[in-house]
Image (cartoon, rainbow, N blue to C red):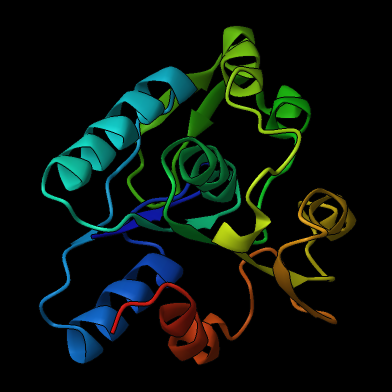
Length: 191
């Protein structure tokens, strides 16, 4: 099972999510790819993700995660807690600080759905923090220094013992993500 976890205010329809789905369906047609539309509450989102992980574990499937931004934060938590491997793309390191600026009404640009970011969500995010990475061998971290949303150096510090690729320039969307898909799949042992 491969679980792709999208970021804050993103969706399963994002370019990266669709690139993963398309690549895996072409190269690994028997692999189940889960790309859930996450609830806006961190607690509710984690309930969704934990249910997918529990089902995969019951079926004896290896756990593999790809997470972008906030999805990287969630992937880090899941891989540290349950095992498996995770690829983190421009991952959020302290989303409870970053998202303070988004408290209030929001609109998802993909679905048009309106939702509210609440102060209590910041504590929910803190409860999922993995301040010390105990299993760095489980992670491949892909960063672009031009990320305009997150300071990539925070991820460099947090995941310093993990396999990491830092590209100069780029942006938060991770420019030219598709060219990394073969290496991502190799790291995740999808073959």
